[in-house]
Image (cartoon, rainbow, N blue to C red; front, side, top):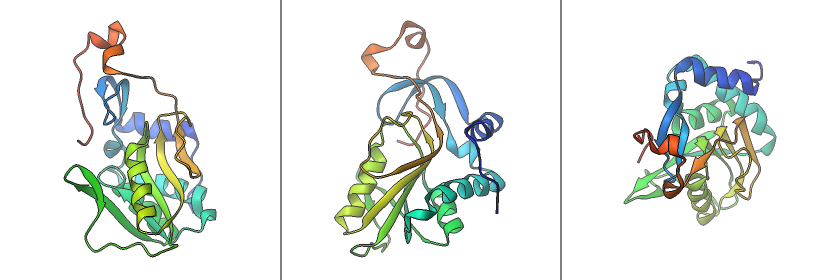
Length: 192
C-alpha cells in the first residue's frame, strides 16, 4: 500500500512535472486565470498516476461505490486508476454534439452506487453534467473525487467532495481582468 499524499507532496508533483503553468489562461468555464493545472503533464508517468490514484482511493473507499465514472478527457487517466485501486468497474462520459453523454454501451443500473472522478475542477461544470447523467440513468452518486479543487472548496456539487489539493485560485470574468493579466496574451491549453 502506498503512503498517503499531503497537499505539499501533490503540489510538488505538479511543479516537478511542469503541470502547474503560470501566465494568462482561459479556462473551460470561460473565466481567466494566472494559473493553470495541466494534469495531463502530471499524469504521464505511471508511478505518479498510481500514487495519486491510491491517495484518492483511500479517501473515498468508505463510500461503497461499485462504479467509477469520469468525464473525458481530463478524468480518464485518474478515474481509471482510482477504479483500479478500488477494484471497481470504470466507465466514462464523452462529448457528443457539445454535451457529455454515456455511450459505447455503458449502462448504469437503477440504484447503482457511482463515484465521479475528475482531474481538476474550478466551477464543476463537467462534473455537474456527469452527476446529472448518473441520476438520469437511475444511479446513486456517492461523491466526487478530484486531484485538484481550484475552488478552494467553494463549489457545492450536492454530494461529498474529496481532493488531494484544495486551492482558492483567483479567476476573473473576461470583462474584469486586472491590468497585469490583460497585458498578457491569453492561451487556452485545456480541452475544448
